[in-house]
Length: 371
Image 1: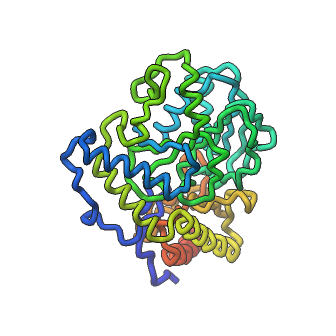
Image 2: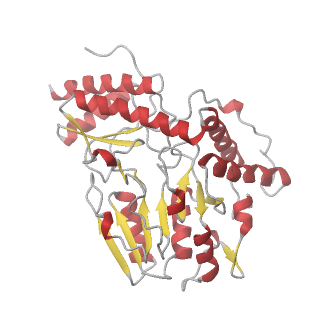
């Protein structure tokens, strides 16, 4: 029979992700709207977004946080264009976004000394093969595969190269060994349920040293420039953005940060996301026709939770469409390049009660389309 209780919030998209519980756009502090982002109030607000991020994440001393254009993609692009080429590069990929960084490094930047290590959807590549005398580019969590690196133990403390980590669906949801990461990028529209178009760039002192000691051989677009006269443009990391940001989006981001603080900081957000994963783990254990795409339990993502179903691809699509038409779950189809399946966002902005209700409806949808 059709379940009686629907999720109170049917938004389970993996980006842009669900707004926080209790979100109300009318409650945002909109004092900066209509003001220049370079005014004193504009710069103060942008600077606050950087400092609050650093404080909530517990970043090490000397790490810088900046707001950059182009979401997580923009933050990664400006990093690769500005820093790569000084030494050989190891780039890892096990899903579509990591594969995109390979394309940029090999075909766009055309760096000569590149080692590519790839794995199929559902598994990690062999991390033991990474050479940390080289720069290393990787995603922490595969948003389209539901596979994350289990920890940072595989990253060398005495590395010579930089570790450049796309962590857009991991920051504020997973424990991150900041001291082992030299560049970290993420976007507001993932774990915090913020708005798109803005990226966050976190640099270690080692990354800053690279920027100040190395000049790439290719022309540098204005949006990617982080140095002037061989010195870091410190203003970028004090709220003086490269281009004009949306102050409405900034207000939305600050609202998200305040909410994280209210639930116990990053640790509280991580715990909430893990509780969400536990709901799906129980669901998979109880139903032998649904499986995690991730093959190893230690690599299970607690944000982009990817599932496969014992059904034909057309039937899986029918399930997704049925749940959408019933107003139960929106945007839960697998990523277009991934194996057919279901992808459920499990970040902290999603409630356990909604996930529990969703799983009952998934069972109903499966039986409906396969019987």
